[in-house]
Amino acid sequence: MIVVDSFTQGTEEWYAARCGVITASNFDKVVTSKGAPSKQSTKYLYRLAAERVTGTVPQSYTNAAMQRGTEIEPEARAYYELMEDVSVREVALCYRDEEKTVSCSPDGLVGDEGGLEIKCPLPETHIEYLLAGKLPTAYIQQVQGSLYVTGREWWDFLSYCPGLKPLQIRVQRDEAFIAKLEAALDAAIKNLTQIIGAIS
Image 1 (cartoon, rainbow, N blue to C red):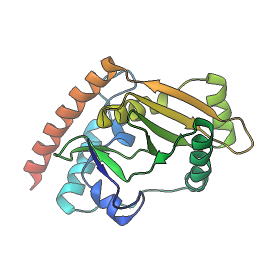
Image 2 (image 1 turned 60 degrees about the horizontal axis):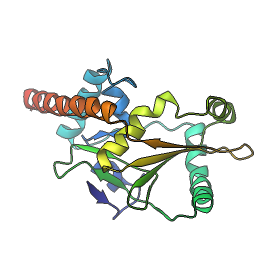
Image 3 (image 1 turned 120 degrees about the vertical axis):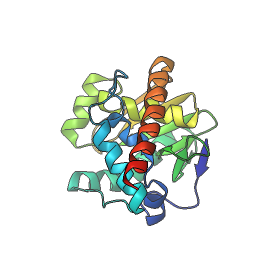
């Protein structure tokens, strides 16, 4: 794993570092939550090929709910540090290896073995998460993918919504899923190389 912390998430440098790179927040476009190939893979690889060839990343869409989540995240991180009595290391991103073809952007690294994923959803969504009491299916690929990229042992998922009880789930490595993810990522990288070769 290569950790980059010379800049912060959301900056121009961060977008440039992710240009044409398969990222954990998009692992759902490579595999499903069950580890099967995703039907979104081809279109996602086309997008990455365009980024790699042009050297530019299109502006990502941000709505009011997403902006709200970004604003609340520091409060959620501070809550986590207080409850767990830890210091969370904020980093820009982590690459799987020196090839820099796969990355994740953790909301924090915890000690030598853990990581943190923070979500600050709307109240109705947070209540749904609370009642389910488990890692939401929509984030399985991202959380297990972050464990894969970083090589860490556990990842805490924190859903935080002011005024409501937080939900914190510690997720351990699922080696069977990670093996499927790794195979799918390696195949995606080969396909991406072929696509770029065909259009360059």
